[in-house]
Structures are given as C-alpha cells and as structure tokens.
Image (cartoon, rainbow, N blue to C red; front, side, top):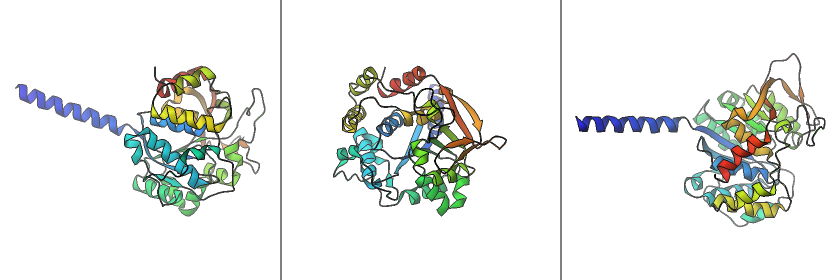
Length: 308
C-alpha cells in the first residue's frame, strides 16, 4: 500500500510541475537595447520573472548587430539557461550613438543567429501559432516588416505588448501628449501594427514617464551581487546619465501583473508625426495603461531584480 501511495504522490507532483511549466508565458523581446538604459532594466526583469519563458531576443534601430551582441552578452552574464536564448539582429537603420555597446565589443556568443530578426520571428510564430506574446520596447520596424513579409502571421501572434505612445500626458508632469520616441521613430511601422488586428497591450507615457529610479533604488539593485545586477551597473555607468526612467520595464511588468495599471480599451491611431490619437466611435484595438502607482511598480520591480 505504501508503494502505491508513493507512486501516486510522484505522479501527482510530476503533474503539478508540468502544469506549472505550462503556465509560463512564452515571449519574444524586440528591443533597441543600448541607447537608453531602460531596455537593460527590462531584460533584467524578464530574467528574474519565472512566469515568463523567453524564446528569443530581436534587435531593432541603428546598428542592430551591435545591439544583438549587447543583448547576447547580457544573457550570457546571467548564465545557465539564458546562454541558450537566441538573439537575432534586425535590418540596420540610420546610425545612432549607442555608447553601451562598448561593453560587448568583440563578444561573439554562440546564441547570436545569422538568421534575420524577421525570419526568426516568422519561424517562431508559425511554430507555435497563437501562443507567443511579442514584447516590443523599441520602434516597431521589425514587427511591421514581419507583417509585410507574411500578412497571415498576424493571426498567429497571441499579443503585442509594447512600450510606446502617449494618450493624455507627455514626458513631463502635467504636459500634453507627446510624440513618444518608439512611435515617432517609425510612424508608418507603428500604424501598420495598430491596424493589424493583433491584440495590443500598450504602456504609454501615461504610466511610464513618472518611473524614475532614484539613487537608493539604484544602489539596492547594483549592490545585489548577482551577475545581472553587475551587468546593469556596468551599462548604467556607460550610459553616463543620472536618473533612469523605467519606461520599458513597465511593459514587461504589465504583462506579468495587469493590476499594476488601470487600463482602458481604446481605438488608437498613429498620425504621421508619431502621435497616438484616440479615435472616438471606432472599435478598440488596444488595452492601454492610463494610470499607475509608481510606488507599487517599484515595489514589484525591486522585489524581483534587487531581492528582498
């Protein structure tokens, strides 16, 4: 009888662990890591979030190959399974100053693919139709190129979670909406994504522009002693500015815990200047974060990336 109970317990535990694995959210991160520092903080959050299964990273904007090396080295420093995550560069764009990529000079990790970002994305979405969420925290050039190359792929993407846009406020407190960087960098690409019919979860400036990481919080992260914390510290010093605003980590956090923001279902359109406008009377195409409590966000973020 004891052997039967032990066997049953083993089966039950195996089923529980399998169920837990099945609940992970498969994601791909599309990023312009290396310009602002918040992309690195977003990748650190992904690494420290067991709810997420990172299938790959694609890079966008400017020197995408250098950005791919940076992302790959960051994952390599994290160690273990993160060294197996593939990284694919998008089509290069106009030159930009990307100081942080100096950290990855001459890095040639085996996970850097020769395959283009668009081809990698297409293969992943066709392999697992309707399962994968794309987190886009740079301009939407790669996503638009994918939709142009393979219009049918839109129905195979579970959701696009993006940091971008501005609905009721801009970069500064009390300001009017701004043309936010990720959208205005390629308005045509953003317009194609918002018109694609893919479900969109949007973290605009309304819930990101107030997320300044103060000195005490930075010290808590950088002193944490993990390889990821050390990588963040190195990139922060190359960034050579003072207080980061964690725009991009909110997009990741909102996917994990939707309660971090009050959201509204809105019909969002993109104009030629990169403004995201609400089209009244039209069917909603995005779930949009409109209000957040910064203290709650930082409690969530620091608990994961800086420990208790």
